[in-house]
Length: 275
DNA sequence: CTTGTGCCCTGACCGC
DNA sequence: TGCGGTCAGGGCACAA
Image (spheres, rainbow, N blue to C red):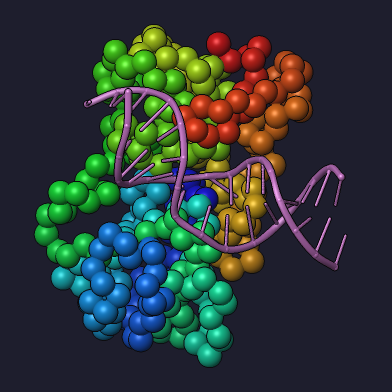
């Protein structure tokens, strides 16, 4: 569900109340699929109890909870993951995988489709097969340049859209913002990535950053169930130009927006504006 | 190494 | 009202 702007919005909202809180009781759903690549529920519960949350960071689409002694709890929300606050006495709604007592509130992780993930990362170097260690640079980091993209992509034949979705190239871009960035840059999602000229990479990176920043300002895009806090939806869906608009009119030229499948994902684009 | 294709799940929505 | 089909902000395992 959430891409970079949504995860960043959730991070900012959560940080306001969880930083400095100490984890009291911990509940973990029995046989939760979200724990499939990490320590057991029993171990995780023991590791978390009594730890203080020092900081909350985002890396790509991952939320990183920095705890005492350099330990980290990492959460990926998958497609339907949600984090929200509840009063301590409130019963858990369905599909709760993790519930932490934090001061006057409880933090709950809900994920009906169970595509999300939870990782326990002990202090020190990242273990090599760690999801975080394979991530590419942050698109909003000034050190990420068009030259980097051109170099990384040289000789590759995959579609531009597929490249944008590749988390080892850039971390955090998902289906919505890949489509919106391609549209804003005037580039076809089908273009072989290796065929972009240097100035086209510049245009693309500028468009991508502008879209991501605007989406963060809008507190993310709610298409169906994303909420950055209990009951609070995003606002950027009002500003989408092509995503989910197939059959409608291009806001720039009036041509019909088309839909295709690229990299296994539904892709919307304007066949006239995007070359 | 690269690229493409299923598949993992639940739930919302649409047309009959 | 009920039921089947389709689709969904992601990513991984696998095959070629």
